[in-house]
Length: 371
Image 1 (cartoon, rainbow, N blue to C red):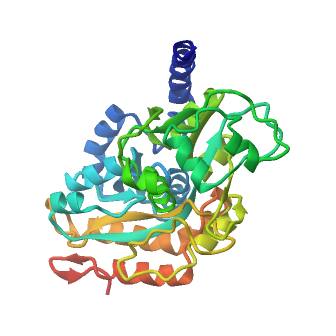
Image 2: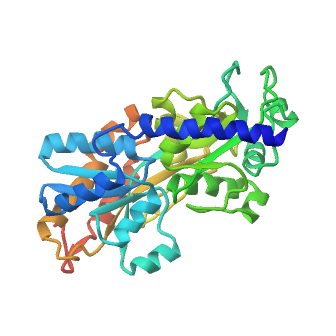
Image 3: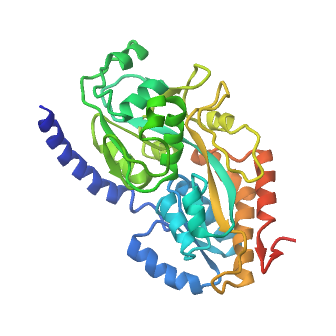
């Protein structure tokens, strides 16, 4: 029976991948194929009015709106490649873009490879939701940290498992096998989710642990939030983790999660904001997961724009460096008004102050870019 189930899933998954390529791959002017991006980048590097960015798919819906509005207001175009945090960090390391974006701070290995000071400027915070495909379920699924960890560890394999049923009295859970969808690429969304699991589950913390890319115990990978969303949406019995905006835009169902205070929290802008109501360190590198806030959603995280502190590299002009700083300054101020409608939590006043101080440390030839 196990092999029959797996074979049936192969056909469903193959369809999901094809469909997601059409559904999610045609979503906007900034989301290009690899070949298109490479061709555009060659031209855009020579264009003084086009800035290049790459990285997080988590923040892509917000950046698409922000950059379209910025273009209207300033005439400065931003070509942002939604390729995942890992891809953005790699391109930043190779100095082929003006800024990267990641949902996880640089780790020790990445910092060593870059071998230069990199500034982390918070852009907003968002929720990673646990989306599931149970079309006949009447009501919202509730999950606690222990059950969630055991599902993704492959220890809970059926939707009508006694532990899930006990947590959801009144819901008629099917005997369907659970299919796990996770990211296949280096991902800040994965870092947020696995950091949370490592905090709440000793078993998960031992193995596979936390990170932007891990060895998943079970499941199938999809590229980007788009890929995971496509797998979940097209596969009955599936469960996966995706950014709230993707779930909302694609009318996907997602679970309420029990937080540290024992409350089941629905992921919303308000509950994400509550999780982010913390003291921001001077370097802005902080985790929001497993929040102490009683009304905070526990699987939340920041996303950071990444730039070199010293902007004079690869024969860059001072004008280009100034345009990058002005763009990010606009993002943390005027751009924040676009967060709520797209299901992101705007930066708190305290976080904006920290972001301002960080941006003011950017230099060109050792001299501050912002006076």
